[in-house]
Image (cartoon, rainbow, N blue to C red; front, side, top):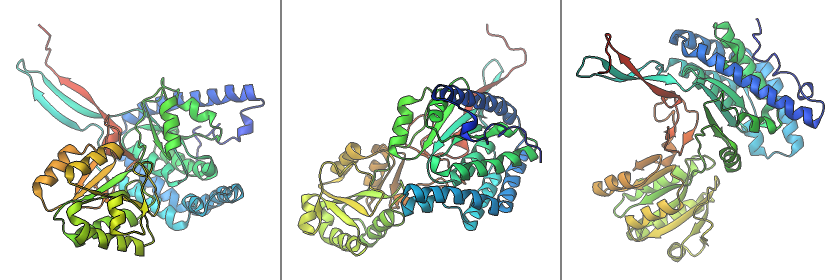
Length: 443
């Protein structure tokens, strides 16, 4: 298969780019500049690609993934060996590991993206002005998207697939711990799009582990239209502080569940246990449970015992400690914490106003839930809680692009512009105005 140059330089070892610190910096700047320029050119070609051609490319990607299992696992083993030597935790190594099943899951995800409706070119509204010309809006690709992420190699395929389907070229910079895996996966994707007749440079992976490449990417505002980070708070804050390109971010997932007066006890128990324990390490897991003071007898005692059985550490307010003396007293530092672990804050509140005030002060605008049988309270909670997802009688763990029916997501945004919540294909497009006239002129 012909190599069209997507990796003509990118697969070279880092030593091929630099001979000294000064030359290293210059070479990294040039590499990233060249990648940006190629991505911009590729994005213009991709924006005009027919949906069938993009879907064909994605089907080839899925097929090539299934046919490259052995090669991908060999490259992944290099990362795992380096990770063990570097002392990565077992959890980190598990996130890093590729297996035959995980590669099959990636291929299935690509097939699912191919099956989704193509948003590019969709006219979202059109109307006729009094003089007869028509005005409307049409969805269009954003252009070039830089995606900076950590740990999970599957993000390489997920992000590339979503960007391709939505008509965007992308520059991917994964974590240094997955450099061999990410390069191998990107090679599969790149070769597949070439086979489908699309430019190889619609997907480019940064081949360097040097952090200078990230800083260079964040300054490519002549070529890159949007940066999407996926990773820890430190990474995201660094990107926010250094990027000259707009950033759509997700900082924290400090998610709350408020159990209202009169809530069904068993339903509230099931929701709270699922929200905390289904996968404690995810951004949509519950970190604080707020309980109306009327529910301390009927609900709180049962909930605390249930969490104790599940070996969840409880950090509670004084009223929570009154209900269960074994609870650890919460401090001011605990309430805004995203634990991503089997630790839960619990606070007894006087009413819904106090619950919403607590959420406004300590929440991260990710996902907040009310469990209630009071319709008026549910409606008020939805209106007044300012989060990316606000839920009634449902687990916060449902906040996910696939679960919401988007097919897939590139991340969950806690921003308000231009996307909020799960970012699927539609959120990776923008809108442009379109006008149809018949020689119309402005008077």
